[in-house]
Amino acid sequence: RKEVEQDPGPFNVPEGATVAFNCTYSNSASQSFFWYRQDCRKEPKLLMSVYSSGNEDGRFTAQLNRASQYISLLIRDSKLSDSATYLCVVTTGGGNKLTFGTGTQLKVEL
Amino acid sequence: GAVVSQHPSRVICKSGTSVKIECRSLDFQATTMFWYRQFPKQSLMLMATSNEGSKATYEQGVEKDKFLINHASLTLSTLTVTSAHPEDSSFYICSALSGDLMNTEAFFGQGTRLTVV
View 1 (tube, each protein chain N blue to C red):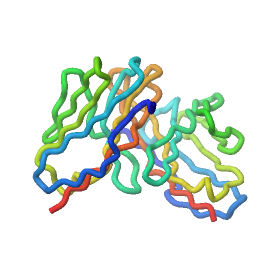
View 2: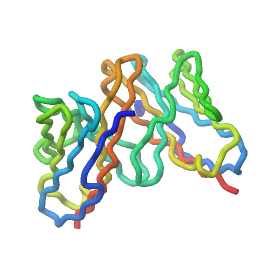
View 3: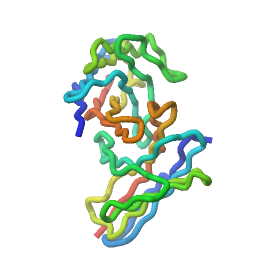
View 4: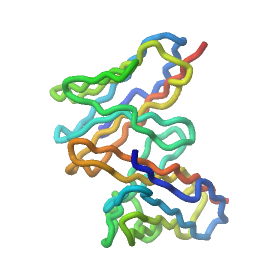
C-alpha cells in the first residue's frame, strides 16, 4: 500500500462546478498535511495547509480526519485556471520528510 | 515567501557524461534540502535528503555513487548525475523547508528537465 494515495483522475468538470478530491495516508504518525498544486512541467506550489478543524481559503476548503487518516480538498465555483494536478502531501520524521501522493489531475472546461 | 532557485532549468547531455544541478535558498538558510525526481505522469519521488556539512541520506533504491550530492553551505546544495544514461532522463526538483514545526512550508526550485541522448 502506498504511503499517500490519491485518485489520479483526470476529473473533467465544467466551469462553475464544485469538485472534491480525496487522499488517504497510511502512517498514523504523520504530523502535517498539505495540498500542493502543480502545473504542467512546473514545480509544486503550496495551495493550503490542512488542519483537523478544517480550513477555508476563498473557494478552497480542506479537511483532515485523523481517525480515518483521510484528507479532502473541495473546490467551489471552478475556474479554468484551476486546471492543474493537486498533490496531497504528508510530513513525517519530525516534519522533515515530505511524502507526496501521485496527484489528482483536474481539467476545468468551458 | 522564501525562494529556492534551481539551475539549469533544462539540460540535454550525451550518454556517459555528468550533469550538475544547483539548488540555492535565496533568502533563508537551509540546513536540509531535498532532491526529488518526477517521471512523466508520476508523483515526485524523494531521492535523497541533503544535509549541510554532512553526508546525504539516500532513499532506498537510489545509487549514491551515481547521484552525488554536496551541501557545502547553508544556501547551496548540488546534485550531480554521473555517467548519465537515457533512463536518467527526468524532471529533477529540489526543495527546502522554511518555518518551524508548526508552520512549515516546502519551497521548491523551478526544476531541471534532464534529457540524456
